[in-house]
Figure 1 (cartoon, rainbow, N blue to C red):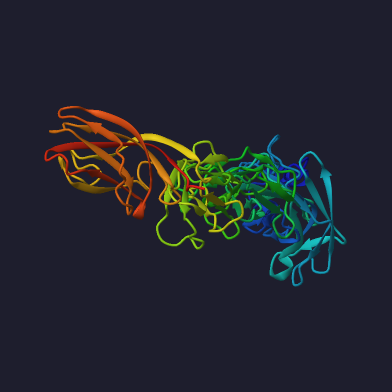
Figure 2 (figure 1 turned 180 degrees about the vertical axis):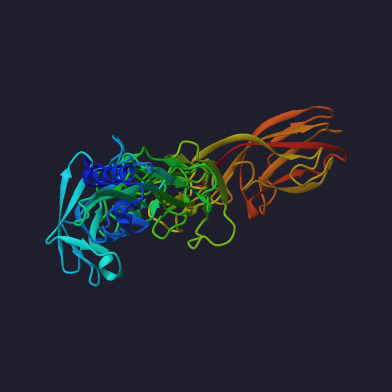
Length: 563
């Protein structure tokens, strides 16, 4: 600003004349007006707080006259304004010190108007930039502004408006991270028409510049299934009235599952997403590894012109619900078998999220078409390899008929339970009676031992005794469809010579024997015997021996019904 504060040369000349007169004529008193002065003030009246992005903000400059006679009336010669200065200590002529001005912070409208009821009422002031490096503007009235010593004519109020464009590079201070302070400096020069005396005055005021408050709205993805991806998006808008274009970054944080206060560390934190103006920005995708409720929180960093914004925990629209996966189970039972064979089931688990838990295979039958009551067999298999095939243990039915498999997956923390249904396709196995006369071996098993009551008969066995042994449904022999069994029969510890006959229960004792023995002798023999009433075979020791004997029978196999 190239305006100097000075007292005119005319004032100095008058003062010199008075000194000379006093020296020559000591009795002449100095004229009081010779010590009169031009005195004006200027006061920028700007709002104490504005926000970046505001336009049409009202302000004014007030120029006041406090001159004394003979300089009562003054003419305002120059009015200049530095809209934004970064220091409260202005130079002696009212200039903003070099390097402290911020020319882009405020833009002053191109015209101002004199306030009614003041000395400049009705005047229009053209406002133009005279120094682009500082933003200094000059106000030029449409007619000469003359201020009187008192009354309404002693003041000129100039109404103007301005826009707050951006943050200052050289604020005088920052009360907090979102508020800048700058000074508005004004200068006026006035001259007394009576004496030609001129003076320059300046004034300043402090303005707080608030950062703009942009809008931030966020929307999380709709519910997902564990293993699927979720994300968040944030739409940032300029402050209203249209504020500065936002820069900075947005950081997205995800809390959960079931971290209802967002107090625990974030499950996911995005890289800062650069903001280049208004628009919608995405967090990028995140794949949860556990089901539950997740909360998104988006935080806008702010920039020089825009305040930061942080969403709250649990904001509306910022919840992503991740449900358990819903696996499916497909099952295939083994092929039909003849009685005595084994059957099994295979379940294929798919659509799970790294499933664990167990699969329970239940077998109902024979001929239990509704799968009611207790299962004939149950096998529990651990799910150890996620999705895939799992096979039940083998089951050997003891009766012919149709058997139904039902497989049920237990589920786990991230996978729902799922079960097959009774009578599902591929889950029935027909167990047929054995072919007539067909021999089926079984693992040897002890059906009878009179020495320890195995088989229900306690020895020793006396002569003239017949007792029965159940063989159907015992030690691998089916409960039905058995025509005969192969038994390895042994007599031991006889006290006299005799013989043993084995025959189908319910039939007469045959005239022939199966084992002959003498006292103290142990004699084994393989006996093929038909199965009689109640799935039993009978043992007979004749009355020819008054002594006793112990009897043992081990199953070797069985035959289907005779042709």
